[in-house]
Length: 378
Image (cartoon, rainbow, N blue to C red; front, side, top):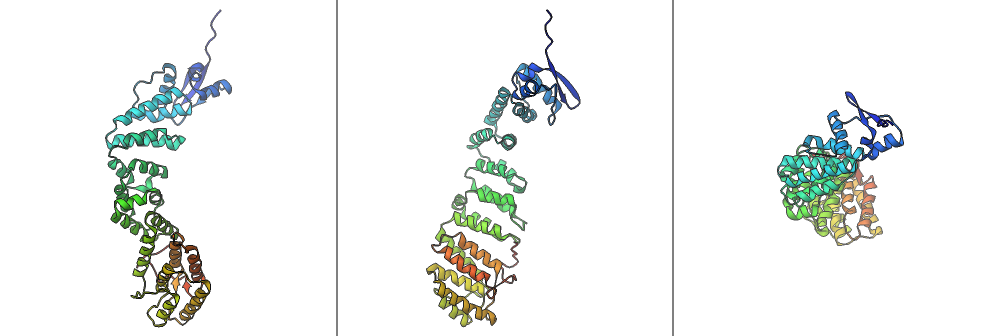
């Protein structure tokens, strides 16, 4: 009795059709088993892969001898092992990648490995190989690799940035230097730079290199068209990275430096502020706000006392003896308190918001700015 001819199927690739025994494809591939045994398809088109790699893949399913993998072959071969669910081939590809990790010393070798591991992570949310790479490279100097990627942070994906942070270990200076370089010539805070800053250990950065850290944060704050939301974010991050009481006093000092009518005058009560306004020693609401920081730092007035204070200020603004404050400036002041650990910060915010909403004390005109030439966009 003649042997029954083996069933074949058609694999369509670019430029040609391959007639392949069905058993060769279905023996180790769960996907081919689904296509040809369960769905009873007679053919299948494989696109998005080079024809040479597909032919090599089909041959591997027959011989199961991986042999030497060229660097240029790895990604497609590994992708085929995942797409068509061939466990032994996926395992062999990962073993090959692990061997490459062990011998990686040059920037190009490390970069090639990072690209492959990140592709696997990004494509299939499989972080095993990236974990292996980080573990293998953690004890090595990766400065050249990191600098190469961080030279233009805007081109990176956020998931890449996250992995670079893991590879960076405690190299805070390198990250801060590259952020500073990326900020050069910018008007706004790039979303990728913001993501990097938000996910860095800023407390460690400040401890390791306080001068550079402060320059970076100052550069971000002084971007000509930084949005209010980004500025609030930077204030929050700064608050999280330094001792709270120290930051609170630092903010007061910076506000004092930007007052239009800065005076060497201590005000610990609302009444003292009003007397200073009446004597012409304080001529703008921005100066009033600065003195309010002093008052709030010592004690918080009750609601009734504050209402009398506001009414008195309204009269002086109406008589043009006191310059109104811009609302965008008020937004920044309020944001500072919202993220502070001042024991009465919520109450203080409520008082400041009352000033901001008072058209007799605040204006939408931007005649007062934090720093000359700085524009805060919404």
